[in-house]
Structure formats: structure tokens, C-alpha cells
Amino acid sequence: MAEKSKILIIGGTGYIGKFVVEASAKQGHPTFVLVRETTTKQPEKSKLLDNFKSFGVTLLIGDINDHESLVNAIKQVDVVISTVGGKLVADQVNLIAAIKEAGNVKRFLPSEFTTDVDHVTAIEPAKSSFAAKATIRRAIEAAQIPHTFVSCNGFAGYFLPTVGQLDIQTPPKEKVTIIGDGNTKAIFVKEEDIALVTIKAVDDQRTLNKTLIFRPPGNILSFNEIVAIWETKIGKTLEKTYVSEEQLIKNIQEAPLGLSIDLAVMHSVLINGVTTNFEIEASFGVEASELYPEVKFTTVDEYLDHIA
Image (cartoon, rainbow, N blue to C red; front, side, top):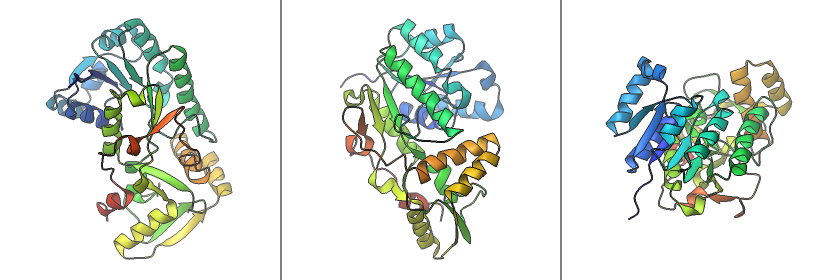
């Protein structure tokens, strides 16, 4: 059996990053995580880092904006996975430069972990966020770095625990707000499943220079269908309020930045249908559940069982 690639993860203490780190270590890859020195001193992060070390993960001190630390870290591995978020997405140009200088990387997976940014239509502020990721794609291609773009679509852990309600912390038991007419199909995948398949892809020639798109059949549902499943779980019909596209756009314009980005992403997914409104063609992409039939993706129905 071929030796498992050594993997470096940038952004490993972030939301999706921690799942990717654990999946990498558990699948037997020598796993390295680049962390800032300041991060090691944060109590909530140090506990997570101790957990990483218990899996045999090696911590490397460095920063995405420190070229020398990047090159030193990259020279120790075969694969680089970035899971950075927010403003750091644009800083991945530093990773591209360091990978080119190191000259040893056989695969780079930039921070994607969203809808396919080459097939997305969105309004601001989500439009700029998606555009930043698309810009990194073009830079990777221009630098001729072997890559895989991971388009996992929606995080189940963001949407399903509150059945798509942004203003509450627990699942709804009386009433529910539905964006649009509720009929647009969307895709929500459990974070552990995303991480597992991402790590499977790093040594897979079928994903080389392709976009890995997640469309497990049991995870493609409309908002109305998700609510109906939830109503079955709790044995109750919820009072439903539908938010028109016009009202949603008004809400986006009036919301603070963090919330406005979330609402604008929901507009792209639940109004524009960007996770399901294009065909995956062999020229650019492969579908995760078809590529890895051995993976049992947690369906939306099964996920909701655990919060009912």
C-alpha cells in the first residue's frame, strides 16, 4: 500500500478546520497544523490543540503572513489544506507563493468549503466573499499548482440544529420562518463527513485539478421538506412564516456585517438555488458520494433524529 501523504493544515483551529485535522490524523496521515504562537496561549484554543496532540498531530509555529514559517512548514509535507476564513481567504496568495518556493507539494486544497464559487450567483456581501475564493482558484491555476477545490455546500451544523432559524439557539417547537417559498433544493452535509471525504481526496488521482462537489442524495432537500421532517420528529405542526425575496434583501441591507453575510449566503442557496442548479461535468468536477460509495453520509433525516 502506498505511503500516506503528510498533510499540513492551515486554519486547523477554525470551524471546519478542527474536523479536517481530526479526520486526517484518524485516517493515518502524518498530520501537521500551523498555529500562531498567540493561539497556543488562548485557553479555549490550547484545549483544542491538546486534543490534536492526543491524535498524534504535530504543531508548527507560524503564520499565513510569515513567508519563512510557511516555507519551512510546507517543506515538511506533501499536501497543504487551507481552512482559513474571513479576511484570511485573500491572504492565501501567501500560501501560493510559499508552495511555489518550497517546490515539493503534490496537492493544495485552498479554503473553499462552500458552494461552488465558479457556479454561484450572489448578492453583496456574499458576492465579494465568493469572489475572493474564485480569485484564489485562478491564482492557483495560473501558478500551475496541483489542486483540489472542495465544494461541500452547506454545513449541517450551521443550519439543521435550529432548522434554519438564525434568531434562536434551540430547535423550533412552535413556529418557523422559511426563506422564499421553501421549495428550492439545498444541500447540507455533516461536518465530520465533509472532513472524511476531503482527506480521502488528497491522494486520489480522480480529484486532481478538479472540484469535489458534495451532493449526497439524502442531503438534498428543500426548506419545506426539512421542516416537514422536523414536524414528524416532534409530532407537531409548526406555525410557518414565509420571508419573500424582497423582504430578505431588505433584511440583508439592514443587518450588521456578520449576519448580512449569512443572510446573503442563504439568498444564494435558498432563493437562487446555487447548490443544485447546475450539472457536474467531468471537465471540472466529481461528485463526492459517487466517488466514495463506501462513505455513509449522515442524511438530514438522521441528523434531525439527534436533536429531536
